[in-house]
Amino acid sequence: MIKIMKESKCRYCKGSGEQTCHICGGSGYRMIYKNPLPNVFAFVTYDFSEISSCYKCHTVGTVICRHCKGTGKSNSLILRQK
Ligand SMILES: [Zn+2]
Ligand SMILES: [Zn+2]
Image (cartoon, rainbow, N blue to C red):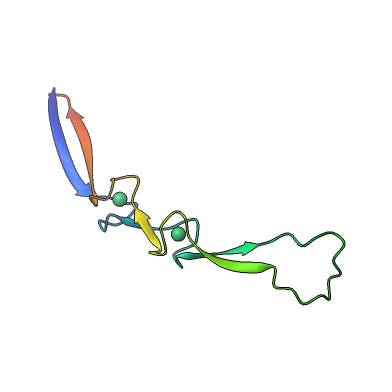
């Protein structure tokens, strides 16, 4: 039995070590919709939304790839029977 460690590019982040943040979709910000009070009429011009910085990526828009932990590489162990 031969063990071979094969180092290859992480296929999830394509070797960059970063992935697009799935919380904000890469924009770094999130729209938060506040629930209007039930007895407020719809025509009242209140702004019920606000833009908040993404809690996941902190406005960067990318997060460290969770598959390769930011290294951009993935090690796959190949077992070869002799
Ligand atoms: Zn984000
Ligand atoms: Zn990766």
